[in-house]
Image (cartoon, rainbow, N blue to C red; front, side, top):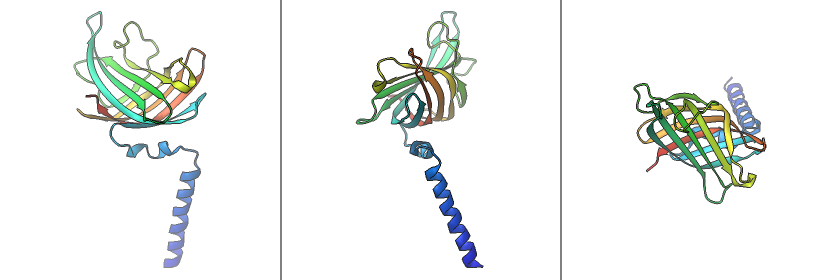
Length: 183
């Protein structure tokens, strides 16, 4: 009986390992939860299909619109590591300040109706510059950023955003990040 249970256990373990390695998920998607502070791991599909890793930081500010309305804004700055695919990305998460001084945990959707100054809107605005794809930046047009944890120095979350550029090239970004506060 013990040998039968042992064989079932070993067979099940091998099947799990086999599924993980043949599921089509990138390495970065599987290890996203073990990122070190200040790093991100994302993959793109669409007109660019690559894995991107790099350093990430964040900063928070409160801005006042021309109408006197306060907005809390969180800026995520993503840059590649040396000797890898040259790219940079920035995402702004902004919401009208209703007594809160900062962005908190939760899901923030890409804003499609940004009017006026870039810091005074509700939602997410983002852009990506990917050198190998030319000088036209990609801009977020749908998706969301989820903040799972935030304190004074560290912010953890996920990105699932669709972007396009002026030539109608499209990319879908998906991944995880653990950002440090910008110093």
